[in-house]
Length: 96
Image (cartoon, rainbow, N blue to C red; front, side, top):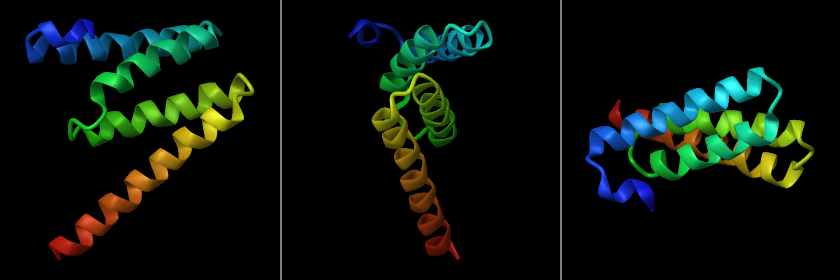
């Protein structure tokens, strides 16, 4: 993993730039490149308690996968998004 040797702030910056790249690739109709960069960003953001970033990436991955007719991957990304939303809701219920 390239990012394991970097300072945490540099890793976040790298991941953020991957997301920006994915957005630009998507706008330029370079769907495969967008999917690749979002996937790489998810590897960094996953399980780091950055839930909003993870949700955004899963949404983009689902959309790009669906557009590329990779329906199994799209379903997995959307399920991940939905399961994460349910865990957030149960956490909010526990707080009240």
